Image (spheres, rainbow, N blue to C red):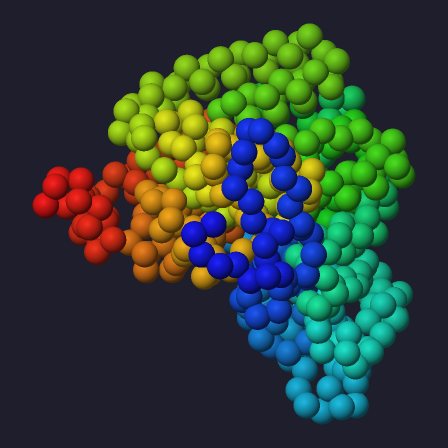
Length: 456
């Protein structure tokens, strides 16, 4: 690298080589002082469970924890929007000193009576873990009285990484799954795990499966409903979109209920087609497979001309990406390559060692691959690699703009659906509009590059 890394970070950054796969040190607590882009364990649990729209989500802790994670997914609902209310017990100094269990129980009873949810999730925060409030005991008392599931989510921020928060959320979902009636679930049925209906993407994917003749029993957790989740154990197959957050749940359901799972992606036309074909194969139905082929053929024929037009403007451009999970990174690399864009920087917050090995396999020679990075590193990589467009989330946007680099939001807050075939086209158009905008040639760094190239 052309700059010095913190000593604790050196094993988490590699430059890709076709000659050898280098194992990244990953899935560990962020280095102290590095100001990591990664969220805390509590936040990891919230982003998974938050889209369940008819459940109450109560954060037991200071109000700042609830404020920080309010609307964190931007998940849309086709009906109730109880998840859009950010509820907190608003712990103050008194509760920190004398305990917050009474405040928690009173808050739960009042909110349940007011909103009549189908279930309630209670999130423990750092201060709760420090003072030792017995959150499960409070939840159990309230559940007996009110007659709905009241589920503790013990994911205090300091417990580990964001991935540990995913695991806590999966445990909470398991408390619901298996408690509902599976009568009427068809043989050709799936659960869609790890899609959170950002900008309505769950609706796009559900529409594909319905056209193929496949019943979607539940989406965990985009546009989620408690009663659908309770009967999820009746599905024939689990289709896992976000492997980082939902693979633990898929494995637990396979062990407990015998439901197999496949890991897929719906970003990019290649991965979307592959996901639909692989799901159809598991249904063991020529009719379902025939419908899948017809759907894929029609949709690719519809979007391919426009994708080719985008490629004419993007050929030779260089991209960097930093996303939450590794499976999204794989798909982005493939989708960008199809547009003629080379990925020169790729990183994730929660990738595993095996996932980083796969990421190295799909990336080009000399691509910088990084785990759990920080703003200083990102800025240095973006300049060193001469990136034209950076793809990330809300925390990465200011870094790109301060450097005079185009930015595309591929995270929770975006308003444009990027999944499926129509999403692939929307993504291509956004990258083209961003990477080819003449505004970037007016930025100081770009202006030096242009004048040097012109021999000025």
